[in-house]
Image (cartoon, rainbow, N blue to C red; front, side):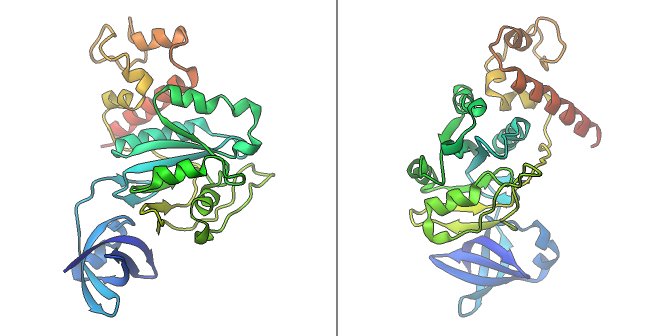
Length: 290
């Protein structure tokens, strides 16, 4: 029995990387009815059935799982947003940061298109870095920050995530020129990028890294969690843990809330606090449904 990592699935076949070779596999027996539950990134056990062909017998327990993009066993998420077009959707950014941390994967924010950055967005990298997130500033066109991004990917299983048009595929082409991934332009009419990646696929980098190229998206649901857990995914809110009057404070309308006071005094950015409140309502609504 061999072990490997599922790098893509196409037309009922599952391509598994094992000891430097890629095997074209099918699902064995009972696994066939669970095909939708098998994700790119899953570690699997398979038997060889022919020359570089096999049958997947079992899916091993996952270390991490992201719902969107749907990928398993990654240890870091490269969250890519543009400093120009499409303009950064900060609510979507904050959702991705929460989702990554809730999935036990480290989020790294990559601000792309630095060579044509709009002045209004220039403060964003420093702002998010001050909150404690790892931040890269890149340009796929000029090569700015690409060497550092390549170092960040080395030795890790990563996924790129973010809306269409921010340059995820262009950045991967810059990191590994031989990939030749399709790229697209931002629609001037809609202000959004065109989808150039249609499915999740793990790409093997020469430096030993593995990275998922994933479809872009504009909407993202939060993972299931308890309402009191949400604050832990906002580092600047977590910093005030224990300073509120009530131990169970949700930092919403409770008296003597240290977080609300920090917002009023400028210690916590208002857009981040607004997103926290919006996410909190969604988490509470989800709690009521199960």
